[in-house]
Image 1 (tube, helix red, strand yellow):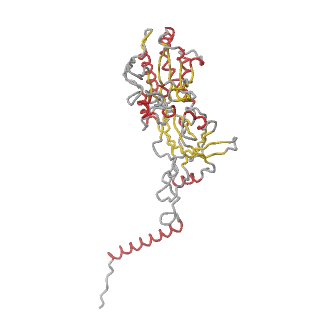
Image 2 (tube, rainbow, N blue to C red):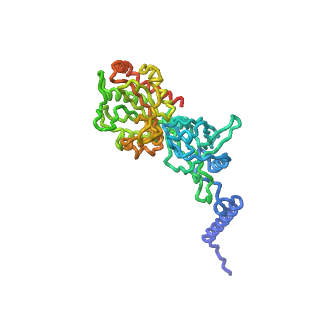
Image 3 (tube, one colour):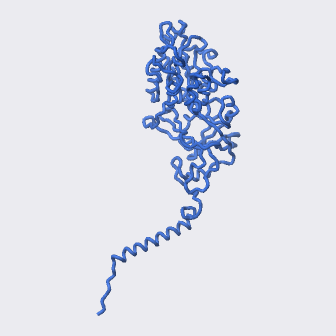
Length: 444
């Protein structure tokens, strides 16, 4: 009788599964080639994906937003810097003597959010503190345009940078409504590319602002909002650590106490504040690597409040750079007038720092108030005015992040009437400074 052969199921089942898998893979590949010719294996460049996505958009939506950008007209921007919270753009390499012609003064910047189509506009002037205010931005991924024409018939010219901006170009706004804005400048034609792209998705280094926010209680940034310094600042040897002493008061002690009060009041409101002195008579220089200026730059603060006294009535008041509009300084000045420290005569007590010719320039390009000039970084020519200021050159001369500084000269310490007014009003000075600062932020 013929013997029946048994089926070797232990061998057949794995073989069957293997055949099914092979058929599945072949069919998948054929479907991919037919319906997705640009995907890997199709032999064409992959344009359907990007290296990064924006906002909450997925990859496909990010690609669509890029493709929908208006780039019919373009304009080249060669330089940029910051002064406080103002982002400033220039048609050519920045120079203080040609800032008016180089700037976008008289034009309107439009920031269009690629994720929502929301638009934020800024009317630009040549003042270094009054251009694109990062504190007024809201989260989004913005394309930068110059807007022209009448309402309803506007034209938009897309801004691109001559040199790519890659990383380390992030700045935080100060605290507003419990949040800080983190603003990253992006201008890199390869920013959205993948390794599979044979050509960049962008033909130029178009400028974008990537804006995100963080709540104060969840802050990852260590940047300060405000730094405070009180005179005297030593610029040379032999100067008293306590400054002037006259009419029963000591300059350094009086101003340091106000600095502590301003710091305390701002900190209570959630601001990150740093008082530059550890004691009223601390031996600290203004210039050089271990000085006040470098400490302030390292804090990454956007604003400095500098408190001072004088021996000359004409110096009294609130001062700011001759290249700035002084909006912050005006707000603080008005509150100090209300507090009774100043009488409100702006012709004498509120004016920009006087511009003057120096040994290093024949065109009056420097602010003479060194506390303001040396905190302005590249924007105000820090580190270039004199041999002493050259001590700041290594960290300030090419620093694109200038600190918007308000210098408050409160009292003529040698005048008994001025000192009497100080003694009568000084308890209100700190509150007035804080109120002026907050009013400025609420309006700007």
